[in-house]
Length: 144
Image 1 (cartoon, one colour):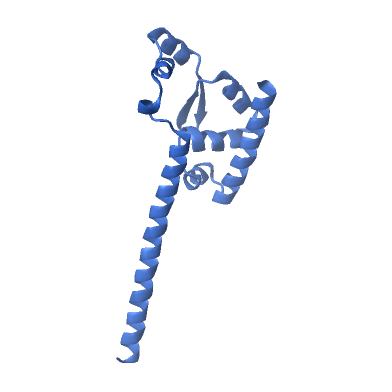
Image 2 (cartoon, helix red, strand yellow):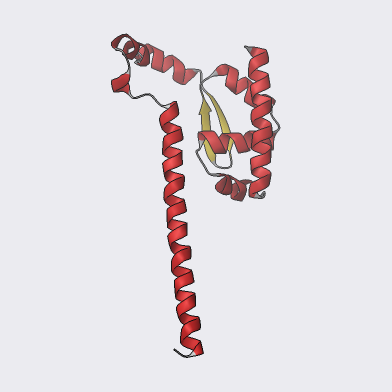
């Protein structure tokens, strides 16, 4: 093998290893997210029958809930918050922090996508989101 072909072979092997590691990491992230979600979620089939009646709502309850929602307008996205305590707590946050929280949790955007929308770096978005969540927690504990 001449020097150039050994170098090319080494690069191919290195690139292949990098690709495999990237795919394995992506699969691992998806599995971790799914495991975290499964910890929080309960299947309807696992609920006892009396709890299923509490999950359902009558038409009048739905209409009233729709009327009581507070809508926040964030960067072209309308975010409806039906919990009055949460909506009030969100209104106490700084506007930029409120945008970050609403885009992250209600519009379900990643930190990178939120960073692009609010024109901040991803680490800044993460830091402000964590700080805002702490403020929200305190406000909701004081209100409750």
